[in-house]
Length: 220
Figure 1 (cartoon, rainbow, N blue to C red):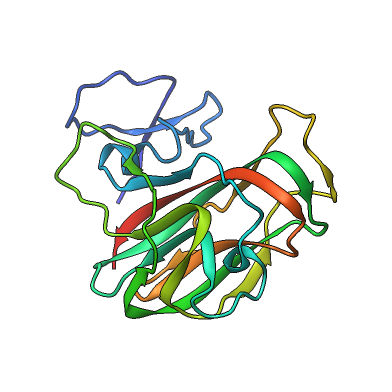
Figure 2: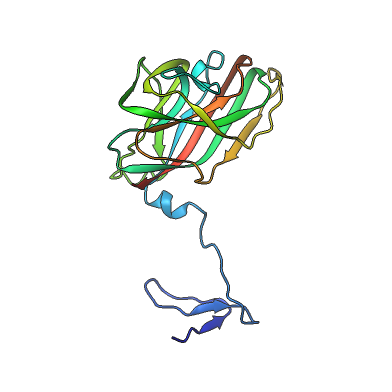
């Protein structure tokens, strides 16, 4: 088999077989055509869970080493029979007031029972990044609650790694526009019967803020 390339830009129509593209020195050219997650978003497989703001201090379920069925303000789980794996992509945090605990945040995971449900009423939002596709239904379970809701059926959590966020103890009461992001980029995957929560190393003092987690649903 003989592989041949063509130097310079190539303009062709859809469905046309094209030669490999090289530079003027014959080196193979590779370029990213669209954004990293363009194809997945277009297919309706990328979702984001959003919590705009808590109203009380960090709940027990969002502290490192939380007990089973702890009260949790923000959590994402993949129920039994979902048929998908949840590939986590990015996590965002916005602190609006209070004093943050030292040592920052961890990614924590746990096993879950097939019948996991929040024990209390919850307020939540989960959105497909391609609003034009409605035939692909998100299969993840999720919880956001301003004061905290027990994850009935959720196991004890364990931290698997620190987030890439440099947060020191201090007050944010007089600051605006302070936000943090951790690019997970798919190195944490939730199979069916598992959950993820962001875990603070300690409680802090009257911490208030918002969260979001973005993931891709991939057939299991």
